[in-house]
Image (cartoon, rainbow, N blue to C red; front, side, top):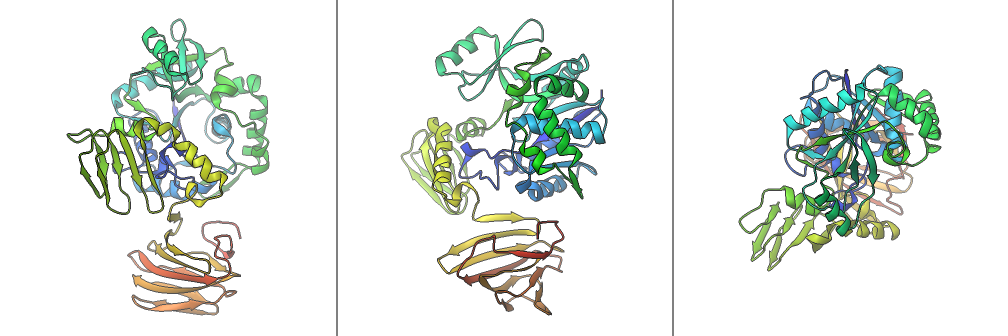
Length: 468
């Protein structure tokens, strides 16, 4: 049967904070090479036979960065980007993709569901596992991929094997003694979160075991809207959908669950310890990245993003530096990083949500300094790109071009600015910034005013379809 790849690209990867943030999550980061995890997942499906253009399910906030990363690969002349206006877990995402495939593609295809943030190193073994999973899916099974466990792991769910390819049960994350027992028995596999099932069989099972999910996502597709390459699920319909995982909503209840044993060099890179275990180490067992200087350091992970990081006398420790945060902890406590993220959320701090550098469809901006009544940013506009025609109620802006050429709309006036030229935008004036050149435009923006929040933007025109 023809394979329809479905890439689940939601989630935030909170255990990889401070590198992973809500607006720049794990799947969009280069963790292990020159491409992001999303990009390596998309490259992986090219090795499979009889595949259709991929469906990528992504949160609304990540749509432009996801689109940019897909198109950077230059591998897919066609693809589908399904936007979730609200997060409702994997059952809603998979059900929505199935309903979309039934309506717009072909209900006879096999959906190959792959999380965007996993690493798989054994490509041939992966292809063989997919072939077997698709064969089982063609025999009316809902097939999951069970990873051959390498160690007693408390961070994963498990699959208990029954006779043949049948699933006996799904097991939640165990404590360490239970995980050790699972490993020694040889009867349990790690639950990978990867699946293969025909659209028809999947929707039939949803109608029996998850009718509320099926009803909500059928309506969300029927009432959805298309915006170029994007297809947006209708918000009100999706808000009514139960917030359940695909395991809880369906796989634990269906009588058709089958499992393929997959020894494919798999990792979900769910923590800094997992990354340390995967990466190549120096002679002292250290994994280092960026501008790092070590003295008498062993079995540690040290990652520098924006400045020199020096460490002395560390053992089994992780140090992760970004422009606005530094994490220091024993590697063995890497699962507890999410507790820091929860505290940041509770205290209303920005560090769980965004980096100093924020990506936009036209480029990016980096906050260099922020005080009570002024803010300084470095703005980069891609060649040929332009910001919305907009206005601010509470802030004035000074722009100084440091590289490239800018076309500036300032009220009724349109001017060209070259390097070392500047202009001033008064609060309440409509304005727009464009890059008509062939190299990135870089400028320094100084904002002055009583309120400097990003929500003080009134858009009048926008080529990216963002709300006015």
